[in-house]
Every structure is written in C-alpha cells, then in structure tokens.
Image (cartoon, rainbow, N blue to C red):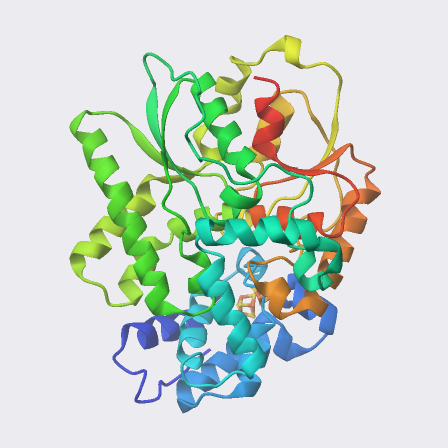
Length: 421
Ligand code: SF4
Ligand code: SF4
C-alpha cells in the first residue's frame, strides 16, 4: 500500500517507520478473519485492515479525527492480526504512532479524562493501590460491575514483597532479577512469592526489585511522559544489578511472570528510540530488553523434570490453559507453558478459539466494557466447556478479568507447577 506523508510526519522517525509498515500491507484482509473486534462488529473500520487504512489517511492528511480515534480505541492491541499477517505488518507499532499523535490533539469527554487520570495515578503504584483493593474487597458487592470485576476475590493481599524467608541455593546456577510489578504484587502477591520459592528450588539466586509498573499501562494510554519516567526508573535499577552481575561473571536474567509486562520490557529499546531519548538511554534499554525473558523461557521441561517430586503428584488435575495475547502474539511464545505443565503431570484440555483475546487487554475492559464483556463471555464458555478443575493463565490482567465472570478458580501457571516441585 503506497502512502505519501503529510509535512508534519515527513522526515520524522515516527513518520518514516509508519510509512515503511504501511507499505508492507497488501490489503489481503486475512487479518480480519482472526480479529476479535471485526468478528464481533463485522465493521471493516473495526478490523486491522480498516484501521491501517484510517491510519494511512491520518498520516497523509495530518489531521486528528475523533471518528478515527473511536475505531482505534476499540482495538484491543491483542496483536492477533500480526500473527496472522503473511506480510509481517507490524500493526501494533503503527497503532502506537497513530494513538500518540491523536491523544494530545483531541479532547476526550470529561468522564473519560477523569477515569484516565485516576487510573494513571493509581494502578502503577502498589502502595497507593493497596488500600483501594482492600476497600474494594470489602465493598465489592456494592460496586458497579465494571469495577468490581477487577477486584480480586478471597486472596491474600500485598505484603512485604520479597521479604519472606526462602532458602537461597548455596551455589546458584544464575541470578534472576524479579520485578515486583504493580497490580500483580497487590492483587495476587502469592504469584511473586511462589515464583521466588520455585526458582530457589531450581537453584537460582533471586533478586526481587520493588520497581513498580513496567510502564505498559501509561504507554497504552499514550501518556508518553509518564511512560518514559517509569521506564527510566526501571532501566536504571535493573541496569545496575546487571552490571554488577557481569563484573562477577554471573549469568543474569530479568524474569517477568506477567506476560503483558514481559511484552513491554522486551520493547523498552524501541520505546526509548521512538521517543527520541539519548543514545545512552537507548543502549541501556537494549541491554534490559535483551536480558528479559518470560518465566516460561527460563526453564526447560527437561530441567523441570529433574526436579519433579513424584510424592507431590497425587492425582491428575484437568486444566484449561488460557494463553494471553501478550504471550502468544506479543512475544511469539507458544507451547512453552503448556509443555511445562504437562511435564509435571497436568492434563491440558483443548478448547476452541484459544488464539482469541479474553477482553481484558490492560485497561480496555474499563473503557470498552461492552466488547470486553462479550469477549469474556465467549472465552469463559469455551474454557468452562472443557469442564476443567482449574483455569490457568500467565497474565494478571487476564486472571483478574476472567475471575470477575468465572465460577472455576483461576491461577497463574507457576502456582500449579510450584506445588509439584
Ligand atoms: S493480513 Fe497483513 S497484508 Fe493482509 S490486510 Fe492484514 S495487515 Fe495487510
Ligand atoms: S490488535 Fe487485535 S483487536 Fe486490534 S486490529 Fe489486531 S486483531 Fe484486531
């Protein structure tokens, strides 16, 4: 698809990148068939091909339009279109450029502005979020369902993350930097604690960092200034630990347990580059992105097998595993979690549309509740149709959102594996 950029985009990094992405699109429409919003609405403008067209027009005309913003807002950024596209169109990069252009130029309705400001102030900061979650648990039944569905049910809450005593291995095989995250550390602190336990049992030295949000939340809301502040804070903290480990010649990884955060950290160098940060920050960000792995990429099934405690495998347990979009499409990581779960004896139940988004998509479910709820309903009907003992996932956002509509317990996969090691 050919495009000629408007003067405000020509000779800019964003403009040139957007143009090279658009040129790859051959307008075949294969992506529409797998796009959750196109499948629901049947509208060309709510599918990837139609959105690419709208972005192309935007780049050519240089004018912000609320109509285009409405259709882009409905996109989940699930990236299913990218894993379908035969021409390797980097749709999410294009979306980032368009959304960052539109956001400062269009005034959203007052209610949307208040909600955005509140979310950006609250969610990335675990110490602010903790009292709200406690209060939310108490008042859950009186809250509107669009908020109540994000409040965790009957769980432990935020404690001193990384302060619990675990037995550290004497001769660790590698060091793991384990970021606390924001919402996960408050809503499901046991995921981080069980990850530390698990990694110690497998011989890793763990360095927990209470760094807070990875920046994904602000980035997806096109709040560039906040995004860059959060990224720089994290980059500096992890960079210092990495450099110290390198001096000691100790292999070191940044391990992420929430796939949404993992996809973001792997993109740090790209974000720093496109926001015109200095070469020094771009290089540091690249080192961070290169050191980042999802927890399922750190451990091989063979290594896990050698630590399996047969005594802990009591009875078979049937699992429906929901692979988050940020893992399967965002990080192109498919089959790894499933292989680990099978290695320790769980039975995985197949179900239809496992490639489709559950509707959570960061803060999407708060801004687009109708579409999000329909997607969750579809997802849960497939998951529950397998009659599982438990539903398992790999991202806190999916876990909390699905939990809001499910009767079957939902856990992070590491909690199930940790039970058997
Ligand atoms: S599948 Fe790829 S090339 Fe085809 S319309 Fe979609 S984005 Fe364009
Ligand atoms: S990211 Fe997801 S919702 Fe957005 S256009 Fe692509 S497939 Fe559709």
